[in-house]
Length: 186
Ligand code: AMP
Image 1 (cartoon, rainbow, N blue to C red):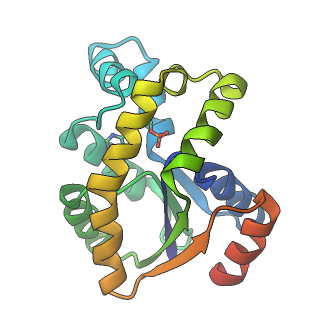
Image 2: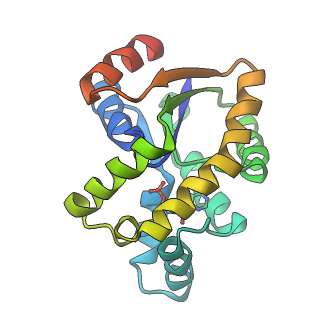
């Protein structure tokens, strides 16, 4: 079964995703990473994508969903996918569910929880290490967190009602979170 990882920026979601991929051999679909690659391409489309990322806004629906669709189609049936950063709002959720259904894929969700205050502190530290322009601006960070709380939380709530979500407390060390995560995905 595929996995969809949710968590506010700074929750450690990306770190945990990489650990799961290394140990269990998931195919990683990292929405932000895919879009950053596009943004670096220097094409007109790339420049459009970059302008959204730099502001901390969601890239338009058609662009991101096409990227997801192409990626999912390219993954062989037997290989499990770990989705990080998609779906981010209810429209994306509807489209994501349709793609998954059309390709015969099933998934469950994991939400790594962390309160906003702690998340801001963590992310300001990460900006210095990873040198990400969108993390260096406090305005962009807060904008992305508000988007998560306003747009992505309702997605998590809906999946919760469908019994698809496992919550994991992200306010702990990387290894501690990972050990619990591992127990739930096995
Ligand atoms: P992330 O690495 O997940 O923090 O994403 C970085 C940026 O990529 C976001 O602030 C958005 O501009 C863009 N992005 C990532 N995932 C999505 C998505 N599912 N829909 C639209 N834009 C996205």
